[in-house]
Length: 415
Image 1 (spheres, helix red, strand yellow):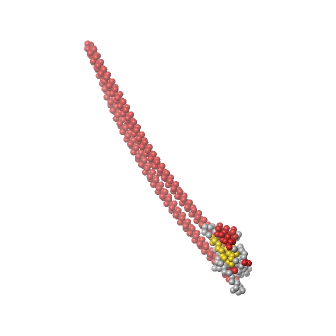
Image 2 (cartoon, rainbow, N blue to C red):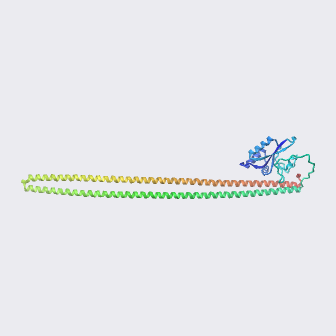
């Protein structure tokens, strides 16, 4: 009848955690001994289940694959009376080990064998027709000791090779981490220099805008002073003209009053001198007085017109000055508003630049911390692997020494 042996060499499928695979296989096969687990993942080939039918073999193969392990099925033909399954975890020997009925082992659960005797292929069926009975005296104690010493030396060399490989990996991780940190440092310095250049450019632009604003304000102030000075000069000229006209008018009034007084005195004299000419002289005098009064009235009207014209000119000049001042104030407010808008735009750009710089620096710091954590995790994992390899080597050496001691004392039967 065709049966299957379920073998395992410690291989793990990609994208699976080795620790989780160890735990899953230990739970699936009920392995509680860490030493047995270490041997199971040492790279040697072990028979996890033997004599399985097709369905059981496929079921175990699928479960191990789901856990992340890479198992193999070895087909063999067994007689009907040996149709049974074995749960003992044993190490694969040569093809003869599959055909012998009860092979002796150096250990109750795990069987060590010389290098070169691993076999994961299908064993050949024994040919009983051509076998002749022979007496197997077995190897001597010296050969067993020599074999154990060879295994011990191989284990030490394998351990040293693994340690050198771990040290190489550790050096590579440190070198990669240093290169990544140096990369991040240079990138961060470049970002800082770029941000500093951008800040300097924005500050220069702000200074130029402020200087332009101050120049515009100075020009507006100068224009305002020039307008005020021109208006002041015009007001002074109008006031001087008004004073001159007032003086001319006062002079004319004084002269007219003097002329009237003189005419009255002359009329009185003539009246006293020539009483006979009183009526004619009085009439003439009244005419002259009426004429003078008319002239006085005209002078008064002219004075009122002059005052009204001066008031109108003064009001027009003040209105023009007020309009000019309001226009200058409006231009000044517009220039101030434009300056504030440009300054606010620059401030917003500066804040955006600072925020962008902080985000990039934060991203770089996070990358740096992530690389450091990954490097530390990798180093810790390598250290755990190294300790595990050292522990496994120590245990194997202790076993080999114990087996060697038993062989020397004759307490262990020879294979």
